[in-house]
Image 1 (spheres, rainbow, N blue to C red):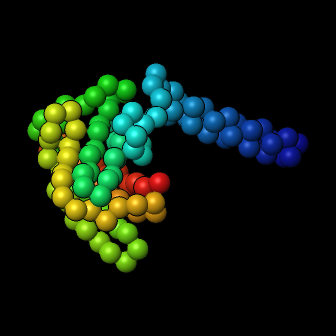
Image 2 (image 1 turned 90 degrees about the vertical axis):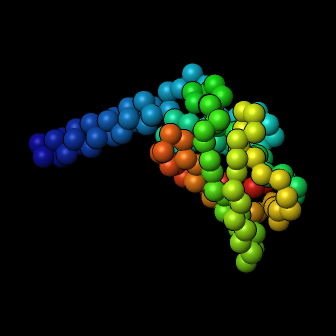
Length: 128
């Protein structure tokens, strides 16, 4: 009898976890890159990082639609091997952007702290 109760409890716990996981990712949009970058999702917002040696761009999408970045800002930390570079991104059209000379390539890690409406969010990327 105890075994049946234990199995029933275990099955119920798994079913609740599966339901919660499905509910979290039940979106009407996909998380594919639209600009050739790397996409991560943070708090129902998609962040797409396009990192090139002369330009860094960060696109934000809220439920699949471009987010208003006109009053947003971002600080990006690039980690390539043992080298660290800090980059300030500013609004340019529908994206946040910085131009200059950046050490980026496959394996570069990037951490973006994006502030929109006074609320910061952190997104972590691994450049391919």
